[in-house]
Length: 603
Image 1 (cartoon, helix red, strand yellow):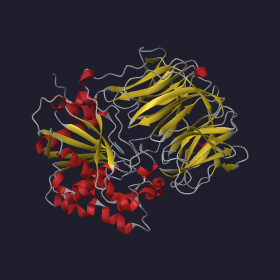
Image 2: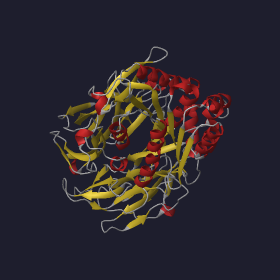
Image 3: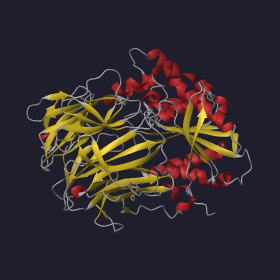
Image 4: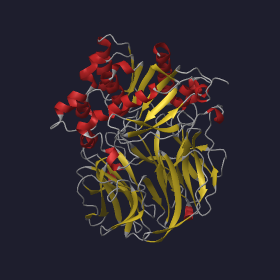
């Protein structure tokens, strides 16, 4: 079998985040140039036209409902202080916000395309306000329509263009929904509740008398529900085992698509509202890969575009005929010449943790081990831990994962307690004082690997990013004898300094998950890997972006310095033009080439 180098795997392209123009032109993001930029197509598999040409990643694209113009977002160097821009049909770009010290979060076009809404922390960095702006105005002319005191976002204009759907996040597992009358400034609270309840993926229904969303208000799992503007909640679709992840609804037609999360894979259902809580279901879309999301309805809702991915399917945009389910791939993001049949699909497995709980994971074996050709007990393993922690490792395409598999590593991806996708109760099993129970799950996962006949128990690597980086460092300090090496990407080393220095707009949400600086400081100190750094024995690679607003680069600097002082082999790599993660292709190639060389030396 031909061996391809790392740069080839990291050059596998992705096309995603699509939006239909009124005339049926499809805009989408594609990273052909190394970062996501806007491209367009007028027919499937046509020659795409590149529309933006920046060094930084474009974060989203949204066509006007009435004109051949679109809005896109972009930050600078990964600092997450996104600005909004309008791109006209003639290619001219207009800066709409122009306040680089503030974040701007898109809230959608008005039905007539004359205005748009957004949330921003330009008044106070710690909170988000709601703004409405004329399409041809500049940032100074935006109208402040609601002063917030928390993490607000806009879910779109009502069908009559007179109201906004507003969401307030208290934590990742607790939200509220409001309706804001733009002219009067009246804010109506639709979801008063006690405890933590999720109300997410909300969009206006066709008549403007209700919104459709997913919620766990009445269940352990997320259900599709109708929430009236009077606050009445009716469940439309439910599943007692799996979450309904989200819903995308076309206001004019009442057509909708929603997805069910089945062990990380998703099942997409398409239909049309025939009553407030009744849906006529269409045939299931014919899509590859096992994961599809980011639905964008086309003109008249006869079809929709969706981003499709899988472990053997690099991300591309497909267009689905709503009534028949027939699909056609529109974009042609390249696999960099690597045959698709060489990509490896994971197996969904379970392992028993310290308290008898079954923990889900994805496990991939390299070709030689998978077909039984390798010698038992000789396969090294990357234990790849997701961030969040309110997230879930799902089987989307990853060039880095496929590279490791091609080089003989197995890859083990646990969804430890606290992960989403397995019900509300599961997500709260790692809250605050139970934080280290999730690290115990890692220990149990390694025990499971030790029992696997193909695994070399002396060559197991912990790797993870963001919160996953904390998990790596915690695993290395709590269970130092288990690991051959650790790779910490933009990870938390000290919860106290992390919370003190993270973006002001994030601190309250993060304290809701990890614990408060005011009341839980002693506990946060006790679980911070930096305070147990003397227990690290395995070689450590630390990777970070200098502009990271979430986990400041000081987290990398302190753990690398103190681990090296202990005599641990440490490599540190910081990119000046990156933020929370390494997004630019040339930087990714440099970063993960260094990681591979590090693992080659130590593992």
